Structures are given as structure tokens and as C-alpha cells.
Length: 351
Image (cartoon, rainbow, N blue to C red; front, side):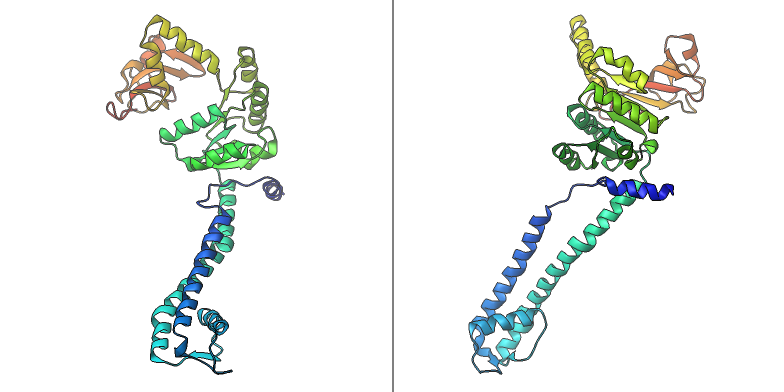
């Protein structure tokens, strides 16, 4: 019964989709134009060599007869009422018309494949991908913050095929499609929409709805359906940060507050803001990375990790521990570590 209900939900909402190379109407127009052009060429060839044809009906090969003979010749119908009789006409049929005949047939067969078989297959394949989504990144809202986040994820090596963008704006979804993401036009505040992208199996969820009230409602809905999935939300009003946390957000990002931190940092030194920007972007010289403690890290001080990277903070049993604290002098199995590392272009590829 659960499987049946799930199938019904998938039919009520638009399935995942990816950007097509050409619009349907443009592809059809190009194919039809190519076929008509090739038929026109064959008509001209037959008309110029009409003396090599014979009409068994009235003995006269007129222009309509040439058009008629061209069509039955290209389609390999061959009624026999008009036939090539001279050596030249037969050579034209063998050397010129036959390759064009094959080209026209391939164009129409290719069109049928593209519009019937291929598109049906693509629709079926995307539905299967939708049903099997796992460990994917779900981006709810593709405004300025959402699009920048997706661009940064892709720059850091995340496969665009593993990113699902949900929004109600077709213009925004088109931009996400151009980046190679899976997209779905749906309301992120509805249970059915989030279940369609298998929110409970996601690796992480990024929420940026543009309005704090909408973002908090989305967080509530996601947390209800996915109790264990990390949720990061953009909140602009400081008063709403606590509400977002209470709604179930794992991380709350306030772009206004972060901008203020950068401004304050730049007031105390002209290089502080530049360094913070480096940390935040993959294009900088250094990066902040969160990972689980590795075997070579166990028992070592946080600031002297076995991988060669520099540990800044670790999380143990819900506590944040700085590198200067006594508990950070010996990393334990299961610790989550925040490390700083140079980007591959600027130093060794340690993590």
C-alpha cells in the first residue's frame, strides 16, 4: 500500500528533470527542414534527367510526375508506373538518390526515436532516479543565496547530478538546469513535495526561501520528515535565528550578521576580511573542512593531526572543543573535526 501511495504522489507533482539540448519545436523544425531540403534536391535531379524516365501511363513525364516519382522512390514504395530506363537515370538512382533516400529515412526514424522512444526513456529514467535518490544535496529555494551555494558546491567537486533544486520559479529552475542539477517545480512547505525528492535519504538540506517565515516553515516540515538530516537555513532577522533553531535547523546563517563580522574584522586590520573570504570560498588559498577523525589522528593533539592539516575545533558528544582546551590534546574515534587546509593549487592536497 505504501508503494502505491508513493506512486500516486509522484504523479501529482512534476518529476525531476534536466535541461535538454534543444527545445522540442526547434529540433522538430530542423529535422523536417533537412528532410524537405533533401527531397527538393532529388526532385531537381529527376527533373533535370526526366528524359531517362518513362511513364507507362501516358508516356509523358511532367513535373508532377517527377514529384510523384521522387516521393515513391525515396519511400521505396515503387509502383512501377514510372521507372528509370536509361543508364544515366539508373546511375543517378544508384549513386545519388539511394544515399539521399537513406538519409531521409534516418531523419524520420531518428525523429521518431527522439520524440517517442528517447523522451519516454528519459522520463522513465528520471522517475527511477527520483525513486532511488540517496545521499544527495537538496536545495530548497534557488534565489541569490541558493544559486551561489550550488555554484560553490560544484566548484568544490560535488557532482551536479547529486544536487536537487526545488523552487516554484521556472526562470530560477532553468538556471539550475543549466548548471546540470536535477530540478523540480514544487512547494517546499508541503510534505508531498519533500517526499518526492526523498528528503529523509538526503545527505544535507540547504534552505533559502527568501523570507524568514517561509524558511522556518520549510525547516519545520523537513525536520518532521527527516529527523536526522542536517539542515542549514538562511535567516536574515536576528530575532528569527532562535526560532529557526527551535524549528530544527542544524545551522543558521545570517548573511547580515556575517557581513557585519567582515566589516568589523576589516576595521581591526586590512587583511582579516580577505582571509575570512578565503576560508569561505573554494577559490581562496585556504579552506575550512569538516570531517570525522581518521585512524592517523587518534591520540594526537588537535593542532598536530596525522594528515598534516591544522585542526581548529572538534565536536565530541555535542560539545565544541577548541584546539587550546585540554580535551583537544588527544583526538578520539568518532570526533568530528574542523580543519584548515590549503587549496590544491596553493599547497599539498591534505585534508
